[in-house]
Image (cartoon, rainbow, N blue to C red; front, side):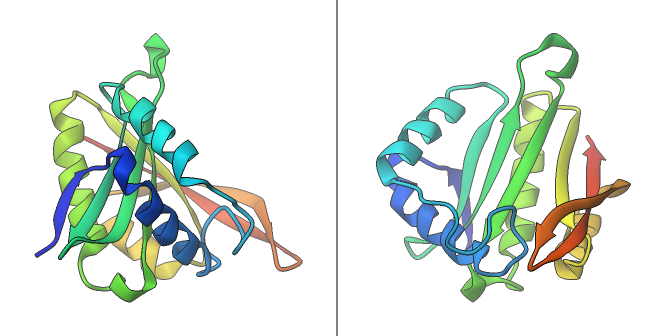
Length: 165
């Protein structure tokens, strides 16, 4: 059974492993192998972000194995405190098995409790599986960021998506 919980600094190494695997898909902001993360620095980031009332790093686990993560980043400026930006990654061994849906379901419930009004994310327009999941979870495409990324020698569009709570 998939369990969703806030990450702790002790989860940093497992999260890095999932991040690295997710980046191998080619559908993440960072190219495969581009990002170098250390467990100590990620552990400090986890503590910092989780100390904020409307931000957090959540992980999906099963049998003590980390399957995926979701970062929810809120800003403190008065005019945007009602919204948060989301980043999600799921290990390739766990895709298509309900991990993303479980993360979204749990985080949306938490976001309502902390009185967030809007969740936002961006996704590479050709990542049809992710776009389908996001739409299934209530996100709508608000716009297209034309030529937003440069991947494998080509400019690629991103969708800007959101969900109102």
